[in-house]
Amino acid sequence: MITVEVKKEIVEKYERGMRVAEIARFYKKSTSTICTILKKKEEIRGLDAAKGVTRISKQRPRVLEDVEKLLLVWINEKRLAGDTVTENFICEKAKALYTDLVSKLPGTSTENEEGFKASRGWFDNFKRRSGIRSVVRHREAASSDAKAAEVFATEFQKLMASECYLPEQVFNCDETGLFWKEMPKRTHITEEESAVPGHRPVKDRLTLLFCANASGDFKVKPLLVYHSENPRAFRKCRVQKSQLNVMWRSNSKAWVTRILFVEWVNEAFGPAVKKYLLEKNLPLKALLVMDDAPAHPPGFEDDLLEEFEFIKVKFLPPNTTPVLQPMDQQVISNFKQLYTKALFQQCFEVTKGTNLTLREFWKNHFHIVNCLQIIDKAWDGVTKRTLNSAWRKLWPDCVLGPDLEGLAHEQQPPVVGETVSLGKTRGLEVSEDDSQELVEEHGQEPTTDELMGLHREQQQEVMGEISSAGEKKAEESLTSTESLAMGLEEHLCVCRMGPGQCAGVQGGWHPERRGNGQEVNSTRL
Image: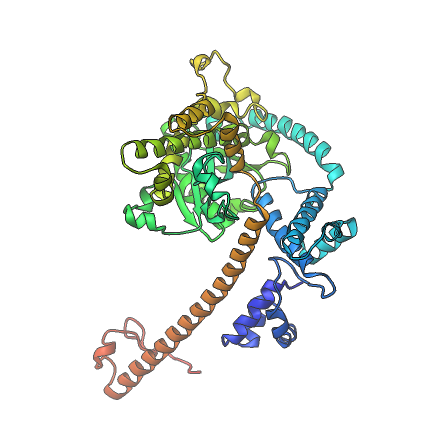
């Protein structure tokens, strides 16, 4: 099936001058299929469908089309976060979206809000229309996840013993979203912002990929994905991205993609792990444990550089990450607590030494460069003990006991309590619940308004990609024309003046001349 999104691309390419035969070859479709799409181009232009939708029914109300558009965006967000997406979960979210969207329509009643049941029939049709796969039936989810986690943990421990892996050689990585400019709701900053719809802008979100080994003594440079390649603050602060303590990448959705993940492995993870193992005089072999998120599908080992063939990959079973994934066992949550604490500290230190109010600093002077400094400080504050203890459920034998290596007296800092104290020194009504709620909100699913914003961004990105492709094709066509003209001019010059006598081609290429001056036969088309 050809999605609505691709059909729009085909129409755009055709109108930009691409021939039907070229389009057919590009999409690996017959010319008759392309012609059929082009005949309906006016109808296709008027469609507004989510990414992945292949068909739209004219009989269905517009609000249901909007529900499914936002639902697909939401499903993608959940999968990127590594969350389980069940049939029941999808149906409940669909009903919630329907109620929310209907309530925004003028002249709607409670009866209208309850008109959509998200039945099994609707779900099956939605799957067929959208092409979504791998949705767990709600009756199977809980029991199968627990059993799969138990079986995998047993097999993993046997693998560690049989392959003689050391904790220093085994790594785990995981992505997490961060709303980097968010404060507890009860501060006067966010109380004012909450009156504005969508007070947590999507573009204030970034994605981080963290990685460390099971011994807890080595952290790999994190990958950070933001919506802007060169933020204004970078120019203002003269930031050199190569000198950052994160690997900076960007795309419009601030998501980790397969391409970005492979880049991180080849440019950050591989070199760092190789150097670490050699410096520790350890065997050059490593295992990377990770979930089956879309950014790292099976087979990505084929994309590794030859020098990193010593890296092997082990995937966690689907829907077991909350139980088994080490980064999900208080590592990422500890980082976010430390980030919140450092965020408060920086705000208060700046306002204490200047005439700026907290609100003025927050609105006009806190930017992404400040955020990077805080991320670095927070990630550095995640201790070896925290990283090592996170493997207790997956590989308990590698976890050091409380009396080993002086770790018995290592105490986790009371991060939440310190954050509350910092807030109160500035006269803010911040409780431990507020601080903890903020930490949890960093991983919360987006609201209906935010999903609508994400959908708009996706549509803009698609149109941007189409525009870029058209501009690239035009440039290539122009370059090709210029090259042909130049070659023809040089050839005519040689014909008029004799080989080697034209200044423009002296010592250069000639269609009937090798580099050493030998004549060759040429066939002209």
